Each structure stands twice: as C-alpha cells, then as structure tokens.
Amino acid sequence: METQNEYQWRFEGICPVNGRSDKYQASLTTSRTVIVEDLLAYCEKHSSVPTFQEDWTHNLAAKFGGKVTLLCYHRGGVRILSECKAE
Image (cartoon, rainbow, N blue to C red; front, side):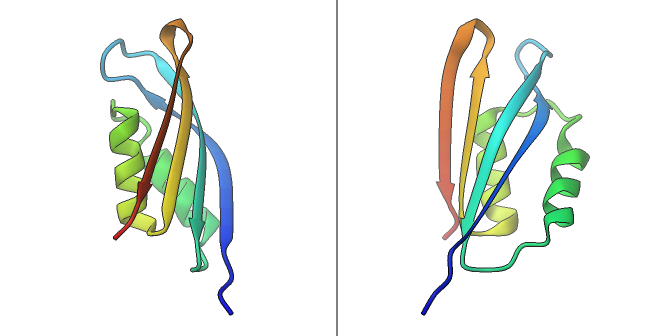
C-alpha cells in the first residue's frame, strides 16, 4: 500500500521580466515524507533571485521529487498553471 502526501503552500518570487513580486500557490504530491521546513527554506532562499514560473516548477520537482504544481496570476491577470513530475 502506497501513501500519497500533498503539501500545499504559498510563496513569493520576483518576475525576471518586470521585477515585480509574483505570489505563487504551490503543491507537491509525493509518496515520500518531505520536511516542511526544508521546503519553505528552499523557497525563501531562492525567492530573491528573479526566476520564471516554469523554472521554479522544474527546480522544485528536481529538488524534492514527486509532482509539483505551481499556480500564479501574472500581470494583466494571466493565469499560468505549471506542472512538473520528477523522473
């Protein structure tokens, strides 16, 4: 029997195009146990570096495994939903 854990959190990052703050809603689904403090520390450490949402999604999946989903409404109300599953 396999347990699936879903971690949901919010964080802010900097848009590399306009320098504005983007507010992300994130989720990580995995069968592993993830230390929440590690997840939050990773986002805090990297949030001052301007990063595209798609790269955030890929980097989080590479770091923590599982499937990462990232949602953000960008300037002008454009909704972007990015997903990445670690291999």
